[in-house]
Image 1 (tube, rainbow, N blue to C red):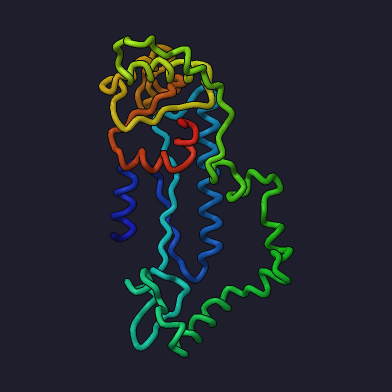
Image 2 (image 1 turned 90 degrees about the vertical axis):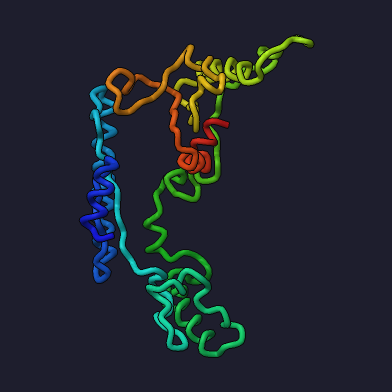
Length: 248
């Protein structure tokens, strides 16, 4: 798809796309795009936190166009690697036994200047200066990146246990427990539901909260802790990061 088609596609999804595709000046262009995106996000957040949120915020997104396998050997044994399907596989599968592939591998790895970036096995000073001072602003040390969980006020499950011999829906019982959990964790717990909570008998949670519909004028910005989305693959993406951490 060309840039015009992609722009139409993602604008239709509600995004504000920005294209970065000039390989000759990719670093500067990407930096400018990231700064633009952060400013747009901060503007949307500021409006929301002021109590006067945008009805339909157009979130920024960056479309980065680079060749597949950009940076790997361009050709080997007369076959194109960079920019082709071969870069998606193992580009140099015979480096152990083929001197030409081994040489290409060495040149490829040395192109990242490891001696300059890691003198004596440590980050060089220039690279260290880029790191945020606060460790939780570093991607690898942010609790979200390793499923660090916020401290939750977890209700006693025994308070929701049933007497022996009692007949009850296990999901309805779980709903009562989750309802209290949401109530005592108003700002640190949400439920991302890949189906309707009512049809799954978890509707007890709506005693203390509501659904969070971003574009609906009656429920927007009212602090709903339940996000229902009938698209399971999207929720699986959420569950793989901080959302599942908060739910769990």
